[in-house]
Amino acid sequence: NHRGRGNPRLRFEGLQPGTSDAVEIPDGYEQRVVVRWGDPVLPEAPEFDFTAQTAEAQAKQFGYNCDFVGFQPLGRDRGLLWVNHEYTNEALMFEGYTDGNDADPEQIRIAMAAHGGSVVEIRREFEGRGRGRGRRTGGWRLSRGRRRFNRRITASTPMELTGPAAGDELLRTEADSEGTRVLGMLNNCAGGTTPWGTILTCEENYNQYFVGGEDAPEESKPALARYGIATEGDTRADNRRFDRVDERFDLSRHPNEANRFGYVVEIDPYDPDSTPKKHTMLGRIKHEGANIRITRDGRVAVYMGDDERFDYIYKFVSERRYRRGSRRGNSRVLESGTLYVAKLRGDSPEKEFDGSGKLPSDGAFDGWGEWIPLASHKESFVEGFTVAEVLVHTRLAADKAGATKMDRPEDIEASPVTGKIYCALTNNSAREPGQADEPNPRGPNRYGHILEITERHNDAAATRFRWDVPIVCGDPEDPATYFAGFDKSEVTAVSSPDNLTFDGHGNLWISTDGMAWGNDGLFAVPVEGRHKGHLTMFARVPNGAECCGPLITEDQKTVFIAPQHPGDGGSYEEPQSTWPDHEGFPRPSVVSIWHGRGKDIGS
Ligand code: FEO
Ligand code: CA
Ligand code: CA
Ligand code: CA
Image (cartoon, rainbow, N blue to C red; front, side):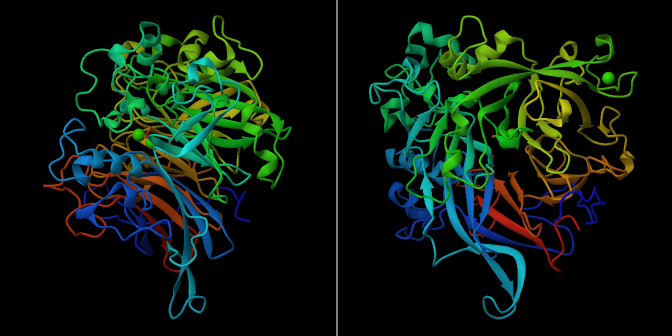
């Protein structure tokens, strides 16, 4: 058992900020690409051919832009890897691509098939001769023989809507008069793994896939606009134009279709025939991720961020108790309970926050907070909203409830050692100096910060909490940065924290999306003890990529990362990355990293 031993110092030699078209790792570590865009997933999938892509092949091959990575072991040396395919970079995939208006319809179909997610069976690499005879490593590769569990989920996979809003008028369309069946999931960013072995994968910027909002019914426009869906001007300009191959993406004809995206989707990786579930009880927002902590009385709490400037942090607490070790026994646990939104109050006088990020006179960005209930499965707590309206128009309900406007809440996750909850607030260039407050102390906030939440009595079901900002990101030489009071001369510059995970000692691992100094990367920092705030860089990703994943396996021997959108900003004709194959174009991929002498990750 690696847990609960306190927080030993992270011992690897940290990397410096920089650029290269490679995954860079500390001395003593090794890496291997596990799976790449286009690799065969289903048994009948053809080998990838970059110059002769088809939608039919893509629907059986590994999808594009990898974000969340989940892992379920199948014994010691095999496992199931789940990977989100958030979106597609058509300019890098197709020759001469401008936008969806000029695209060949087959290219649009390929892009739709490259969205979604994949389940792939992987196996451990052994060092030396013969499988099973050499030494175990923390490296993993795609299993070519066994792939019984392999599965592709795309923008067209049938899914079920669950929970109190399923079947509501707001979710009914011409193709689905009952409002319970949706095709596909879109822009799945981060996610989580449930204690019962399923995957939670979260729909984020789904607004960008719809057109025709200018001709949608007037009464639906305010809600569409609150979710960033264009309701005026030429909504077809610079759009992927999925509507050209599937008219449900045209809101002038199917205004409710957009209400059917923006959910936490639960997928059972052990059952390739299972129907993915979009859980309305967890609300409809630009869901970044969803991570679970069990409450003191054995129920399930899910922490979730809404990644938009000035949007909110949410928590769901189930009505039912979690039944240990049973996938079927927990299959409906996310369908009833209460959805809350966070309200944070600082304990220092408001006038001490001028947007500069200067610490207040009490020496800490901290205070109290409460979880405001928005709705249960039976009852709405927001005046003027039905339960279904709260769950479909969650942002509007939370606006009315007076939630605290945060600087783009990305991943939020509890430490397995202390139970404290950490949220990455990635940045917010739009916060004016006068809008700075104690939980979001910089305006503009270019580099982001980390929020720590301690639930009352350390119970995930609590409706009150204390909070604190242990890390204010940026260049450590900038006085408006803070690393829990640690000596800043020993700390690495970091900006735009996005995905979070923990090692077994409770050290926080932070990946970035928008480093201001060189390429994005993966950082590690103790959040307890003598070295609290001593942040160092563990990995750097190729040119143009953000660092997704990350995930440290339960045995502490592997960290998976997903360098997403390598070469972003370039084009098919002028690629700025050709990682990982260096054959003229980039392939978004998942990488395993391990210690060459078999030590735990972080050693
Ligand atoms: Fe897809 Fe919020 O990052
Ligand atoms: Ca304070
Ligand atoms: Ca993200
Ligand atoms: Ca991001």
